[in-house]
Image 1 (cartoon, rainbow, N blue to C red):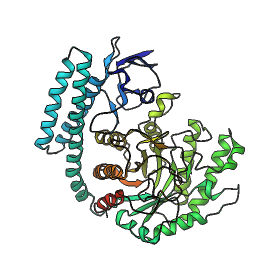
Image 2: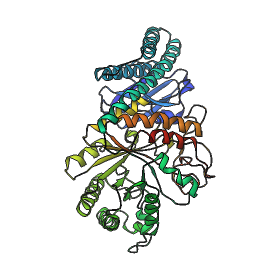
Image 3: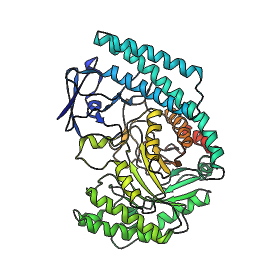
Image 4: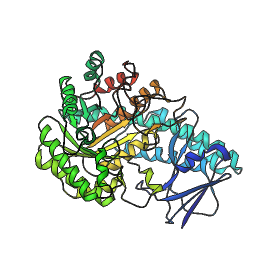
Length: 493
C-alpha cells in the first residue's frame, strides 16, 4: 500500500470536510481510490499503488476564493511534506510551465506578469529553505498569493490574445452561447432580453416529465419550451434525452430496479420516440447527461456504456444530419477517490469516440461551488489544462457550467446540491457570479476545441436544480451575470 503524509500548519487550518475532499492523482489527472485520515497536524493518504503523484486538496489563500490546489509530482517518503510549501511549489510550477507553452505558441507576456512570477520564485526559495516549519508555511502562503495572482494575469493575457485569433480563424463557423431552459414562466420583458445574451438554448426532453405513466407520453411541456426558445431566436439543442438521476427518470422505473437490460430497452425506446418527434426542429442532440455516474438505479459501468452506445446509435439512425453529443459530469473525477476503481470520465468518453459511433461533440458539466455532486472551484489555468486534455479526443467540446449567486434557502430549487459555504471570498453573491462569468466564459471561448457554452440555470423564480444558479433572480430581475453574458455574446455570431 502506498502512503503519503503532509504536515498541515497550523493544525486546525484544514477542516475535516476539506480533508476528506483531498485525493492523489497521476499526470493524466485520474484520481486513485484512497483513504484520508487526519491526526493532529498530519494528513495521511493511503492508496493501493505506490507511484508518485500529485495531491489535490481544497486550500484557502488570502485574496482568493478557496480553490482545489495541486502539488507538484511527489514521491512517497517517510517524512511528512510541508503541505503549504508543496502547494506553493505546484501552483508556481503550473504557471511557469503554462507560460512557457503559450510563449512557444506566440504569446506575448507583459512585464507585470513576468515580475509577478519572479517575485513568486523568490518567495518560494525562501519558503523551501526555511528550517522552521511554521515560518516555511507562512512564506509558502505568501508565494501562493503571488503565484495565483500571476496565474490570473496569465489566463487573462492568453484570453486577450487568443480570442481575436480564434475569431479570425473561425470565420463564419457558429459558436453556441446558450442557457438551459427547464421551465417556462419568465415574464415577457426579461425574456425578450435573452437574445442579447445568448444565441442558443439547451432544452431538456425529460423522460420523467414526458412519460410519468408507463406507455403514456405527454410532449406538451417539451413542445412549449422548444417553441418558446425558437420564437426568441434561440437555436435549440435538445436534451439530454437521458439523465440517470432522480430528476431524469420516471418513478415507475422502480419496477425494473436491478434489471439493467430492461431499463436500457425502455430508455432507448423513449429516445426513439423523442428524436422522431423533434427531428428537424433542433440544432443538436445531447443524447445523455452525466452518463459517467451510476445514477438513481446504480447501473453498472458496463450497462452505462451499452446505454450510451445505443442512445447515440438511435439518434444517428433516425436523425443522421443533426450533431449528437454525450455529456460527462465532474470531469476531474474527484468522486473516484472514494469508490471502486472504474473508468474515468475521460476514459469513458475515449471508449465512445473509439467505438466509431458518429459522435459530433463531447459535453463537460462543471457546477462550480456546489456540493454534493458539484465541482470544487479551480483556478483558470487548471480549467484551461483540463479543456486541453479533453481536446485530445479530437471532437468539439460543449461546456455546461454554473456558479451560485447566493447562499441560504432557495424555495424553487429541487435538487440535492447546495452552494459550498465559505468557498467564495466574501461569500457567494450576484457580483461574484458575474465575476466568474467574466473570467470563465472568455477563456472558454478562446479555446479552439470549445464549440458551445451553456449556463446551467435560467431563473431562480422557476423550478430549477441548482440553488441561486439562474441569471434571473427569483423576483424576475436580471442578475449582473446576464450583462456579462451580453458582453460575451458580442464575441460570437
